[in-house]
Length: 418
Image (spheres, rainbow, N blue to C red):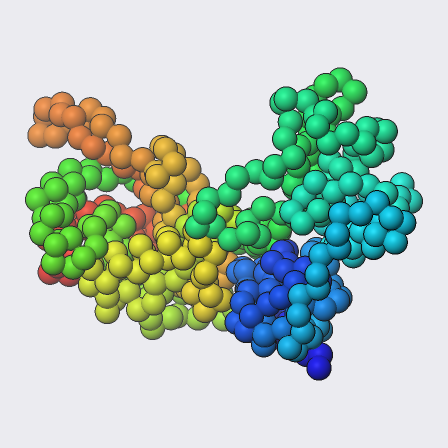
């Protein structure tokens, strides 16, 4: 009995997805709920499990194929047994069987394109990838007339780039495997398809630049009070709450209080209407193996600092593992981006539509400052607020940023909300 493997229901507003990785190939035994294939949407990677025990039959859609919800991408033969591998024989029948098995292996989009352009017979090309899969360098070697697998230059490798163990398999584009081709001048270049996530990020950033009247205002904050408070209580905080006390929870609390005082910054434009949000959902920009993602902290006005730190830690781990859900990334009324973790001293963050503002944090750096007529060294951080001038006036933007500065330089105000 054959059972169809279908693309699951996709999240709302997502029309299609791309197959990025098959974990099994035709003829291999599978177990119920074992992950068969990863598909990528504009925001997240979804895992498609096996519906039952059996053997994976014919794969209908290869890696790189665009699929829709409910589409059949393969079959599982229920109760079947994994076929016995053919003995190592040199008979014509055995060779033909091996050629057929090679031809049935899924090809990456780049390999398929090269095979079609040069009208190649894949059964005549030896694959060096997993399970004998044909890689891009195998085709290049075949075109160059080199059939030896062992004669690659020492500076090149057929092994795909290493990916952190906790990151999902689709973090690397299927067509990016193998070394880059060498041009006639000895210089290398590699062309890989843009991932759906990267394409969507690019689209939204361009949209923000083209549709919003975006300005950025800057300020700086003395981080000494926060650093001293954190240093004094971080051990007791971690012992009691089971999570480390970082800087982000201070910024989330300060931003939430500032959003309460300046509702325009928490609002958005919908056509000719202004939508004032009566809740505070703050997105935290996270750099993941697949690209930038912005999971949302919901109702930050009702979260205490341990809750915020736990949520942010969880988001970071799930972003690295590629397990963030669409719900985690949907919505948000304001965003905080911390370029300081990468060493950025100053930048102008881009608004995440349809939001109207974004706060940029930067590197903490000791600088000479004037206090009470004296020059002192203080750990300073530049803050940047990019905002949509169609909705937010310069006065509100500046006062919003000053409110955050004042609360961070006197953290007691975060507890008293004054």
